[in-house]
Image 1 (spheres, rainbow, N blue to C red):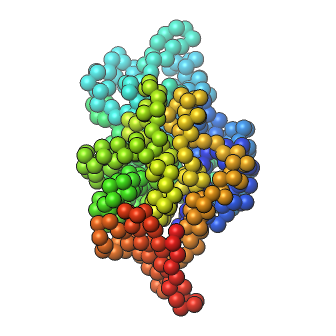
Image 2 (image 1 turned 120 degrees about the horizontal axis):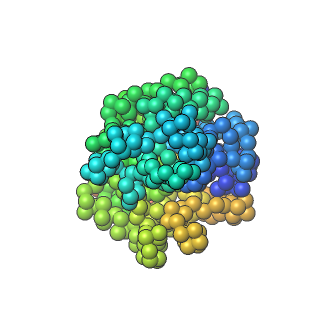
Image 3 (image 1 turned 45 degrees about the vertical axis):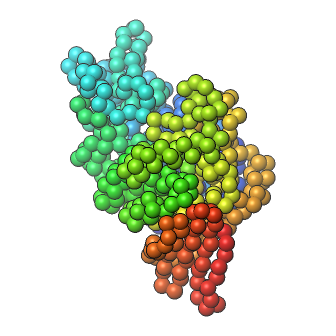
Length: 482
């Protein structure tokens, strides 16, 4: 069965309860009607980056549970899981064998040694400077072998995340085995994390290189689709990349929506958001919040530089911003490409503004995803940032079962759940989307499916949201304020 057009939750395996069994309990107990899909962030053994430096895909980290626990969640919800295609953990058996044996390792060809990339291993600085990275450092690290010999190796992310060479048959063999293993568990979707970094060619930016990227995506899709599993390429960059994916028939993300909605509500103008809604891809996953942050690079040219700066400045003011609270680079709230902040805090913890934003998201074309902190309208976790000295943790609070029982009673959460349940249950959202002409301070978003019609009216000045829908059984039109 294909992916359902229902709201999905993004969560770590230990963010709503201590592990996968507790997460499953929470989902069934409190959110069974509001959430019908679960994007389960990495649950594999990992050496860093909260699961995004996987050692293997054959196991579930025992701290979270077992494959049986993952499968049970997949029986009740559309399951989306991650495959970190660009890299493998430094602590994996593959890299550790290469570290110990060098060119004599059976896995040596999986990795991008500078000696492999260019005779003598001396890559010109101008070539390194062209490489697109998300870290303020060159795209490599120096490894030391047991003999004391030093070697430069390609590494575009963290110290623990070693890039893979997809021109290598050994890489294809290892990753094919892992991909088939994951797809056989019958998730509805596998997200290909950091897929754009897998294309590597000296003298270029090594990011989403064509036609290499299409060969790779087809290769991944070939193995996943055999088990009725769809793939979701994850690319955080200019919105044009999402259009390229859509043109090839792939799912894509609407990473532009979060900043456009903030701009709309901050500046009290719908002009830029309407322009996007008229042209955005239809086969997409929509987000307002994720485990990373609120993307700033995705809206380049959808907002002009002045509008982006104005939106970011309001975000700093509204969001109890870490940038203004702490000194030192580790607390800086603006990453290279995103702002670390919960979406509820980004809207000044204003219940009406938050519900208006979610109404816009749920009426935007695509399948909505809601991050677990956003599901509970969570505010910035300053204490966690202070304790861990990691800016992204501002939006990564781990909820205990007791906290969930308390927070679900809050009026803003109850309003959100009511809205989510309507989005999941009303048939109009499987029909046609219409953006109705309206003033610059109002959004009117309509979905029509035969005798079913749902229309959202959002006032971006007062932040009020109202939904009108038809009830064919009672032959009447129903209004409710969200």
